Length: 245
Image (cartoon, rainbow, N blue to C red):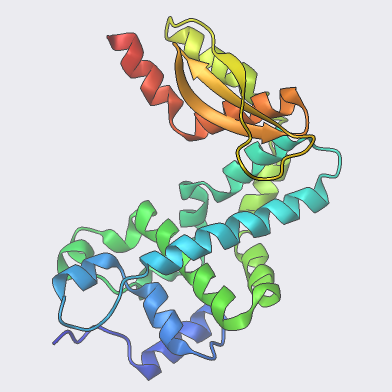
């Protein structure tokens, strides 16, 4: 039976270190449990933090998006999207997790821990999202938002101080043309069954293949969203593979 699961006393110490008070400390334990521990101890009767990570991803994105929306009232959709992406990228979340000492509290399998898993950016970013999901469930949105804005304050400030990002259509075109492939093209698409009155849907195509989709109040906004989606979906790697063939 594993002995490295945190008991009530250990969880209290974690809450003190993170300056959080959970009503249900089991949620905190779950947020700290890496999948390697569950794989190593399948009979321990515990789950990994992956479901909380899924929830926390949405919470973090919403909190940052709302904060940027309020602080940048004149910024267009594409710029807000780029700045949010900068603030919530893996490296940013890992930096925030490291700053609050989250890695030292992670519950991992022996193999993962022995190979530096507690310092691995992916693990830290995932744990940060899981913790965010746990706080949201336990303390509600308002308190979760307050904590997240504190934890991610430096990353959000850095995103706000960036020089105005390039239009995603321009950026995608630059990347594609550097690879020797014809410039991206865009076409209108069906918005689907949802009510998108006065909305446009667009697809970004590279070498005839759909690489991203987007929706906007104007055709140009939909195309920019599709270009950003292509960038977010690692179109760069796909373009490179196409260029090599």
